[in-house]
Image (cartoon, rainbow, N blue to C red; front, top):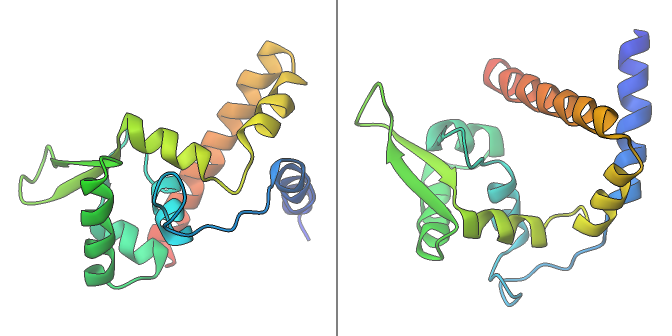
Length: 148
């Protein structure tokens, strides 16, 4: 097996386990989020809009199921919709500032442990690490588009 693949398979679980916390999520929590709601928010971004169809495909849910969840999250102020710049019929979903807070506080990763992990790195290392994670996330989105 490729050494790069081995490195990813070895390193990712170490990061996950260092920052992971057990969550029992129900809609009765402070942000009224279920586990699926939290996962939906984690797949959205404040900067880059995502089409609902892409999100449904990636999350492996029916568009009608996703539509109901998105309407609820929008009602809570966690997501914002805006028309696509190229096709006004298409809506793009973005995480709102409130949604970003709710996502962070309901993440499977503990924000304090993630901050402590990043604090172990020198500023330049931290920047490189976060750029690398962003690149992997971008590749993951591309992979999901190509092979759902």
